[in-house]
Image 1 (cartoon, helix red, strand yellow):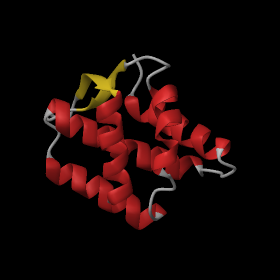
Image 2 (tube, helix red, strand yellow):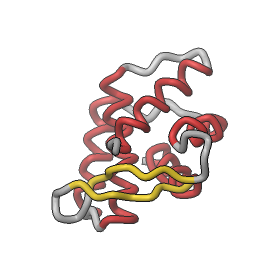
Image 3 (cartoon, rainbow, N blue to C red):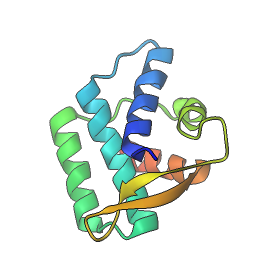
Image 4 (tube, rainbow, N blue to C red):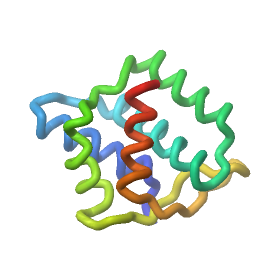
Length: 117
């Protein structure tokens, strides 16, 4: 089973490429880790203080996320592998990985969290 941050990083790079942009691998990985941490917070008890720290550090290091809400459909197709859900590993509350079933709606919440952060 894959880490969701890897799936989301790939999706960010693919969506950027589809829209004529380039995502630096480090920035894509950092924003993907932020999105995965958000999902871990919602589903697996990842602490909100750690989530906010990751979000802040990512924004300070790489600037705001490069993503338009018009990318969401493509992001869902890539992340959910054309399905309605994907099961992946996300950060959990006890500093260990947690298994999560991620829906399109939750993915959009995570993307909005990154964009608003």
